[in-house]
Amino acid sequence: MPVYNSTLLHTCDGVRDPYRRASFSLCNRLLRQAWNLTWFFLYRPSPRLCFGWRNLLLRLFGARLGRDCRFYPDSRVWAPWNLECEAVVTVAEGVEIYNQGAVRIGSHAILSQRSYLCTSTHDYNDPNFPLLAYSMEIGAYAWICARAVVGPKICVGEGAVLGLASVAAYDLKPWGVYAGSPAVRVRERVIPFSGETAVADREERR
Image (tube, rainbow, N blue to C red; front, side):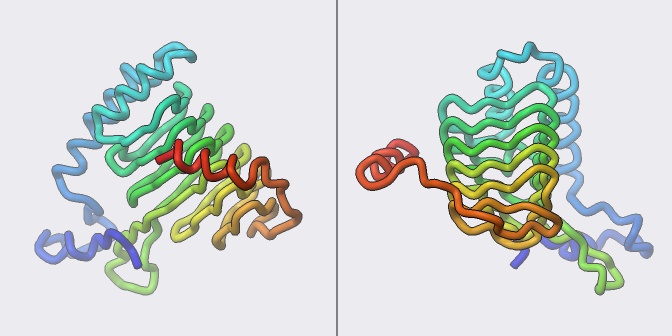
C-alpha cells in the first residue's frame, strides 16, 4: 500500500488538468526549496572528507543518521526528513535517493556511484494520474552497485547485491547476488559473519 497518494491533495485545489496539479502541499514544496538551496550552497561544495558537515546538514532537515555515515558531496537526497540510516552507511558520488516515501538503510550498506533509489510512481490507470509513494528498505550489508536502480515497492534484503546498472523490479532476498534488467538472482553471497558475531553486530546496530 502507498504511504502517500496525491489524490488527497487534489480534492480541493480547483485545477482541472491533472497534469498541472502539484503533487505535494505548499509547505512541502517550500521546505524542499530550502533544502535544495542548502544542498547547492553548503552541501555540494563541501570538501570530500567533510562527512560530519554533510551529516549535520541532513540532520538539520530531519534525517535520522547513525554513526559514521558517509555521504559524498555529489549525492542527492530528495527529502532528508524521509531518510533513516543505521551506522556506517556509505552513499557515494552521484547517488540519488528520490525518497518521496520513507527510505530506511541498514548498517554497512553501500550505495555506489550513480545508483538510484526511487520510491514513487503514478497511477497511470487513473485519469487524475496521482502520485503514489511507497516506503523502501535497504538491508544491512546490502550493496547497490554503480548505476543500479531500485524501483518503487521494492525492498532489498540483508546482504543482497544488485549488480552494475541492474534494475530491481522485484524484492531482493537476503544474501543473493542479482544482475540484469529486471534483475534476477545469479549466485549466492558468502555471509561474512555468523553465530555470536552476527548477534553482536545486530545489537550494535540497535
